[in-house]
Amino acid sequence: MCADLFDGIEPDRPDKSDQAKADKKPSDDVVDRRATDSVTAPQRVFYCPRCRNPMRRIEGKMGPFWGCTTYPVCDKKLYDLDGHPSETPDQRYRCPVCTRPLVHVQAKAGAENDADEAQARTEREDYWYCTGYNKGCKVTLPDNNGKPADAWRCPRCGHLLKQRRGKNGVFWGCSQYPLCTASFTDMGGKPKGPEFE
Image 1 (cartoon, rainbow, N blue to C red):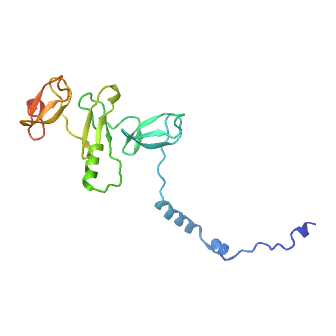
Image 2 (image 1 turned 90 degrees about the vertical axis):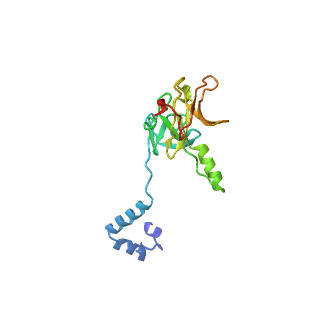
């Protein structure tokens, strides 16, 4: 009865492709895998410190940050520090008013037709803001080749000075004008005075 079931079925015979696989050395397979792995290197996965699930990099309106992939179940957010998640922001640059760390916001890459338009857009969107923004420190500084632009504090009230253009030329005035009327003459792109040396 079982013999009737197997009548007409040919036994497995190795074909030429199977023979080629059998002749292949194991070391050849290792070399092939290494060659393909170097071309498609996997990206490193960073895990949420709260729930241990993968995190993803998000381009937010205030710059890039890392968020948990299980959001809204886990709402853990981390700062972006050179493409890696970090509990603390970049400590290299500090707010000139409150000394909290500054965060860099970069322009998003896009297809631009006009080079002048692309430059103007980059100038508008590349800036630094204070991490104390939600605590009342509203300092934003323009970007100067990957660093925050130089800023000076008003010696009277402690807020930032802004470069302004008046009827007598360029000068530096307090950002809290008209509450603070301090002003300083411009000397080569910075305010003139012993406080600013």
